[in-house]
Amino acid sequence: MQHHKLGLLLLLSCLLPALSFLPSAAPARPSLLPAKKAKKPRPSGGFGAPASASAPPFDVSASLARSELLYDKLAASAFADVVSEDSEMPGQVCLEYVVTARGGTLPDWVPVAQLCLLLPSSGPLTSELLLPAAVKEHRRELLKAASVSLPSATLPANSVEYAVEPVADFMKLVYSAVYERDSDDTSGRSSTADSLAALGLPPGASQPEVKSAYRKACARYHPDRFLDATEEERGGAEAKFQDANRAYDKLSSGGGGGGSGYRAISGGERVGFFEVKGKKDDVAGTVGGGGREGGEWASAVRCLEPEVSRFFLAKAMANAKEAAVLNA
Image 1 (cartoon, rainbow, N blue to C red):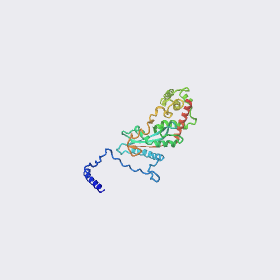
Image 2: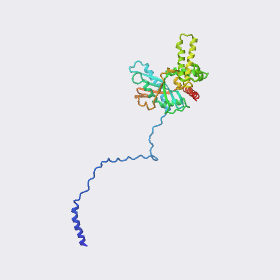
Image 3: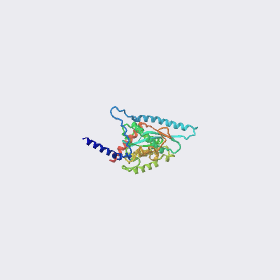
Image 4: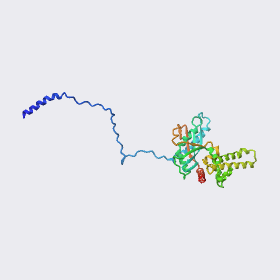
């Protein structure tokens, strides 16, 4: 037994020098892949977790109230700038418009608000450039103003169109020509047959025939042609002229043909009526340095008299109803 142990010890003593010549383990080679980033711990959203801060909801009623105050401020500042003769800086001009809306349950343009635009009296900024931006800036307030004047109307924000017209044109060619006239008229609205007869047309006349007859009547009874006539002749011509305008207003939106009856009021004299084209985001960022206040230009809106809006809505609804009956 001792001889076997001695033999094993001698064998191990011979192998140990040989094992020392074996190669050691190869060094680790660097990886070609980027090191993985440590994942950030996700905040717990369970019960008891702190609530994330969120912006308060937009208060459109309060915004409209602020805009109405700003409207008066812009108009007053423009007036003060005009009357000041000591300033060497270029002045500012304040332009006021009536804003009309169409869409939803509004079958035709209906005036719903006023818009004030304050801009430099000279320079690259023009009303044509700024009006779409101003309407886009105040689209929520305009929709609120429309709902205040017309609470029974349905006005989806994504389908309402807007148009603007200078206040002076609206007062002369729309308010005085239609609202004051029809509000004082206790005999009721004329029928389509009466309107056709006023223009000398038979029932079923086409829209081109209506337009042609209207132009002939205006040319024949225009007040400028009766400056040297007697008072009786001038009065008769003026009555005929007003009848022709009233008939054309009726037939343009009712039984005589298609198109916008509101737009056709006073014929081609309303050159300042401007439809704001494009969606709400099409004009975003096109005009810098202004908006509501404090820049190169500013704008504000305010509500229109509800009675005026409701009058034109009733007129549009009546015309649309009569047109549907006649076209059925």
